[in-house]
Image 1 (spheres, rainbow, N blue to C red):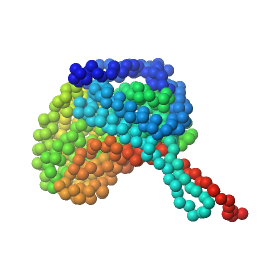
Image 2 (tube, one colour):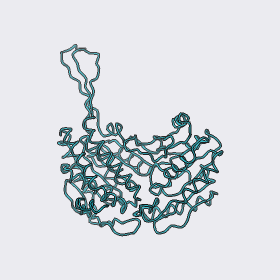
Image 3 (tube, rainbow, N blue to C red):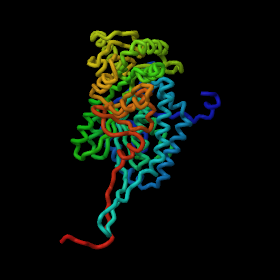
Image 4 (cartoon, rainbow, N blue to C red):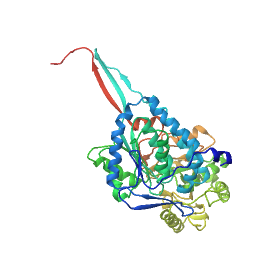
Length: 496
């Protein structure tokens, strides 16, 4: 930050030790204190006094009460809050980037990308109050009218992960609020500030009425299932693992009052390099797709599938490029690979590396971790039945699979329980599109990595990667309901 920028920047937000419920910052009633730490340095960033079930109930009831009036507000009032929030994000850009780096272990590049996504979603949400349109429906009966009104659902529950914490919370929060809903958020325990409290500070400053956005941070044993089971929320928006997502889906169906779910779950994205691909472009895209944010992204290029005719050259170029990546302190602008979010994740990666070697894969690059930083690893000789190819890696480990031709590449790409994102590289764009349409995934990018610019795209997957869509027009339908109203302007005819 320049000296001039520092002089004009607003005073940094303070107060990260509790909950945000009904417009008030307060300690949770559970009483247990949870430390929020920097994954790189280990420094304690904040200590949160945790919430219990009573806090959760108060948050949902406050949201339900506030939502009734909010839905009736003029579009310009709801849009205005979004526009002011976007302006605040601009003024506090460096503050937000700093939190993403310290709390989520984001490198500078990843933090800037996440800020752009959050800002863009906020601006797009400002248009939603004017785009939630109803319909006049044709009828074959004289003197009668049929209308479909689009109304807010009510209260939305949001459960978000730690990897893109601010964006993956906000992509549901901003559209939900703009469309007249209220929101209760349960951020990940590793990122309570960027996943929730920081967003609440921004909207509070933007003038959002009390009760419409609530952040509840508590033990899973205390508020985990209750978050979904509660009678108030009409939809639960979840981003996270397939195991937890399936559990939430089951709870939503078993709750006393059925509710919708929007689930974006695990991924095993294939990045396919066909025999006519531009190798320089494919290599650079594959490196970004695999190693952005240490590979801790559900859409990361989890498997790199390469045609045998170009396999060896691709591997040589890919490995050479990966060797140039700097890893270490995410505060260093030159660092491409920062820390793993926590020790449990690190242990899983180390076990995965040893299992891959035992299964017969050949390690071309690697190294021992330095604190919470794992150097980039590259494996060849990987087959699609290995655990390294079938599991979501979520770390800086790149498995490369050799295939004989395009048809085998397609079979391997689809041979997974997941279907979130995917990519294909070829100099023939129409060949790429034909291939893309045969991939079993919610998204396929031609000549672009699987972690594409999806600020307003149709987030969501197929198979065990989820239900629902999270971007643009799609999320407007997820967060509203159609209410059919008929009007009889003339009497009869009556059947009896």
